[in-house]
Length: 606
Ligand code: ADP
Ligand code: ZN
Image (cartoon, rainbow, N blue to C red; front, side, top):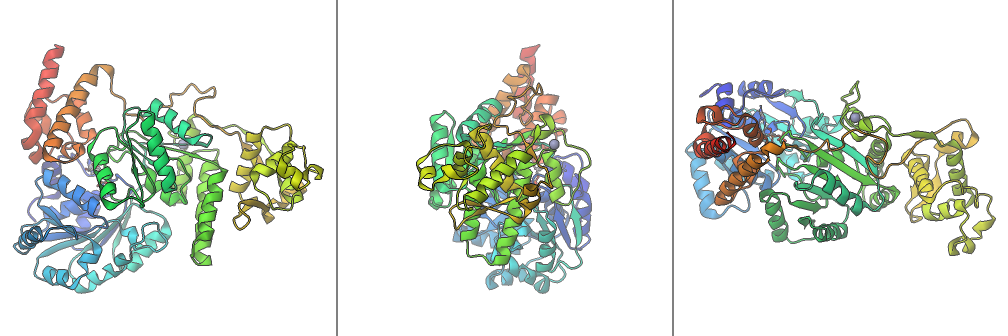
């Protein structure tokens, strides 16, 4: 072993101490044992194999599903003076030969490869001649057929165990539910692996979910108020909505680029690169975007449409605030989202069993939306990590929702479904309740049903809210064959018979419209006014250095490290070396210039 792991952490990475289970994980693999590591996004999974890669003799092979991800990691590693390369389908032949040579002569600490490449015969023959230290299987949930990122090639990775029996394997993922966890261990044959499960709480993320009512306008207000200059991701369900929203945001003066599977590869990769490299850019995307985006300073993730499961929601929102600084997960949703998702699900060719699981997942997502207590409690509970106290850092903790006894209203809503034959969607049902003489009402003679006009004491939006909550809580099913018509579920019987009462939530369309006096900008990074000039200067210097090398700014120093500089104002190299995230290599490369900048700023102040 060349250096102790703590020395590697200090000298190479510039960090003070290990986080969470990092140290235990590292010791496990260094002893030659297998490990399965579950840590939330931003938890620090990479160090769990990068430190052993430096501590152990030989090369660590990292299996990673996406080329973009590998390239990002390799630029970061090279900035730390670490010898890392990747072999993928895009590697030019001469480059490939050079890398293979370095590999054979023992000059690589880390080699990143895609799974399909790793398992080719030629690659395996190459590896047979190499001194191997460790296999790291990143994004290990890709092995799960139930999950959202299934990659069939991952199933073959169990072969590594048989071909390289003495080499330890470490599998890592941020997907935590028990089923996936079990599946990873089984499919990768990690029978004797030590399992490390970190807390999945992302304490720096502020969660907010509101009812959708002119979603784009709501989004714009949120951006203007809380993230006027920040980078972030906006997720939409369809390509068309992605295009529309990106276009519209640009018209409103925010730089936004689209990203979806219908675009050409070049276009997508260009937009992705700009997102990584430019400050304050917004990417509007379908779920096709994100896996492998390690950009640490994504300050918000906004959902204009409902994700199909809590896993997906957590994974997507988890892309915010990887650097540990404050970030916001914001979402608006409405009944229409539920109808649309059910339509997509029932239109898929999946087996009834899979469809049932998907339905359960959507239901769990809906209960997160409709909950009246703390969002984080619901989220963590879903991942088997019950939290006793409310978090104090979500919309519901800061501005508790009011509930009201909706029993009578719910009964009216349900009987209107029944009296009109369970054949109609929400809009028509609301018209009937409110006694509107629309063409459709006349066509079906609904002005003569017993529920016609019995709901005049509520507004249209209120009735829609009542229906949405009844659907979300499983009293009503949405019939997809019948184009979104509502049907009664068995569950509504006690409510109709008067044996059960129901509390409904008072909808909120905007935050902070109520009496709350709490500050709402919880997801914002705040720089004191007097520090603003230095902060801007530090960012400018960082950007210039990044542009010279054609890498994203955060690869030079991430926001967190820059923040530390702002706080401690190191005026010599010794002080600079104490800043978290400044290792030896970066100190030599960039330390002097940053020290000079800070000294000048202080001199100017005095
Ligand atoms: P993950 O892969 O789990 O999403 P990363 O490995 O990218 O997370 O780590 C997230 C951030 O935290 C990175 O900027 C990383 O350098 C930083 N980090 C990881 N471990 C430590 C540590 N022990 N001390 C300080 N920063 C750390
Ligand atoms: Zn909370």
